[in-house]
Length: 131
Figure (cartoon, one colour):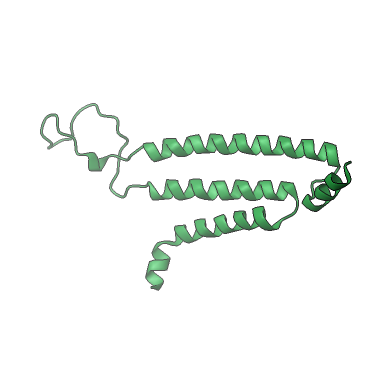
């Protein structure tokens, strides 16, 4: 059992990061801390997908110019190539993460200008009072 946990340490790291981010989003009352928690959570998801897409035997990128030595003409051993699709999708996810962070910070600035605070409880009280 201990060997299994030791061999899959990266998954435990991702689970830890995800829980830290989830805790920050749910338990913290400051909006900036919630945004940072969201960013940590998204980063953990991206690291998880990149880690699981690594191929043990993949030694090259899939740019084919000729068949490998010893292979028949026109036949390519796909097991020697790494799949670029998960990495490309995670690059897209990084762009979405940065855009989400920018929008969230812009909304936080607007909330601060209107309510003079970033604390969730104080914003609720001020909204009830109508100021």
